[in-house]
Amino acid sequence: MKIQVNARNRAYQFDVAEGQRILYGGLADGIHLPYECGSGTCGTCKARVTAGQIDDLWPEAPGRKYLKQSGEFLMCQCTARGDVSLEVTNFVYNMDPGACLPVAGRGGVCKPRMLTHDVIAFTIELAAPCDFDAGQFMAVQVPGVTGYRGYSMVNFEPGAKSLEFLVKKKPGGGASEWLFNSKVDGQTVELFGPLGSATFFPSLAKNLLLIAGGSGIAGMMSILSRACQEHYFDQYGGHVFFGVRTMKDTFFLEELSKYRGEFPQKLSVTIALSDEDPPTDAKGHAGLDFDRGLVHEVAARHMKGKYQNMRAYLAGPPPAVDAAIRVLLLEARLTADNIRYDKFS
Amino acid sequence: MPKTLICKRSDVPDNGLKECDMQGGLKVLVANSGGDYFAYQAMCPHQDVPLCEGLYDGAVLTCHQHLWQWDIRTGSAIGLAEAPLECFKVEIDDDSIYITAGGDALDVGELFSGIADSTLGSIKALAQRQEMQAGGTLYGIGDPADDFFILESGRIEFVIGRDDRTSPAGFMLRKGEVFGWAALLDSQPLRIAKAKCIEPSILLRINGKAVLKVLESDPAAGYAVMRRLSSLIARYLAPSGAK
Image (cartoon, rainbow over the protein chains, first blue to last red):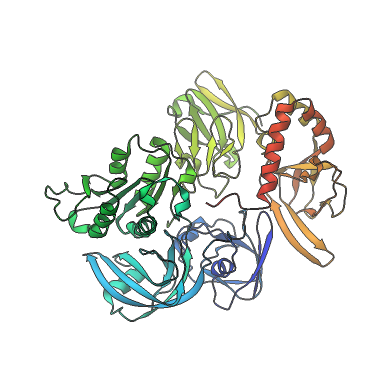
């Protein structure tokens, strides 16, 4: 089936298979259609049908609240019933030649392990190796749950044969319930990706500020992994702020402590605890700082006057990301292009 | 637009914002910048998000959704923003804030905003207002490119190709958008696309050579306009930079 997209600057044509989401078809063809979450929540991939018929796979998608005019739909949630012409009001370009082209794939879940009482980590062994950029995410569809959910990769390696993820327990969240309550080891999941533009490349040549709330630390670990592999912190500063409620909600402290140990001069890591005072005895967490407060407040306190030549990456619950954006724009005076995050709401 | 009361000065916090409802459903955003007041369209030109929910420090307004930003004193786009804000003229009378005029398409336009009033006045004098019915064609492929257009309202679509093998080539829908800019280039180029009105549309039609003549007498404005024209053209050629 042929899809024609009439964008502000020009038209694009691509084919989709039966049942393939229109957004995924265009992205797989190297057309940078507008999107952020790729999973029905943010509304960024809004488009309008001008000819043909579509089917909506998830009529209750939260991102539909951004639809206003008749004929509007979310490209990430709709499939074509035949040839379709649609319109997006954005400028649309082909993807950068260096971009990792997203593809549909599948993989087997293995090594599920609880990191805290409500955060699970797991590995997906890929049927085919995959290139992705540090900070990107994968749309994952689990058995018995309609639709994809976006999960950021924790690891970073070119031609990865497996992907590491972590997910926070969300009561009533289909994919999250499945991960926490089922025998997931060995089960096959559908994938589409890599996705997301909050990516880090060593050619950036700026100091890094990574602010993450809860499971938002996933993509930051990928960025840290790449930066450390390539000795980025020999030259540039790195400041990591990881916010959780209490000490029993912390995880990855060992890994963060190891990265900090490799680059003690340039890399700092601060764990922000919102609901309790930091431990008096931080033994076993060599090199990590602990402070009390919401992660954006702690970051603002520690970073005052240190924002020169800075690129910030943000991830976590939307209120935490919004609060961090406010600090970075209004207090730190970072320019908008130096504040990177993917919107999931 | 007749002079219309929109709110009291005391309604707009210091270096803050207020969204005002006008009769007829129009919403206007009023910004207080160090005691000066400015009025703009209330919704983000990107995705219809209320700008009063944005981040504002008294100088720069940021839409919280995708971080588009504008200079609050001019409405011009900064950073990631791809469109300026539509501006309304403001008049202060004691404690009352009035708007007296909606932004003319030429004032809002991405090409001429910020140039000297006298030069803008000369260009305005050259502009002819043109009303088009839905389905009307403004120009066809191969026509001489004498005039360029600024969209006041409505919607224009472009088509390239010949006979029955045509392809859409983008569209214009924002007030102040400029098209047919080949008329501002040297060597008398011809139209490379067909421009069709999809909805009833109102345009300002301006002769390219006459504008170039006006700009020759004000090189500072000419430089500013040519810089904007080249970045406008570049938007059609390549990505504006990785996000």
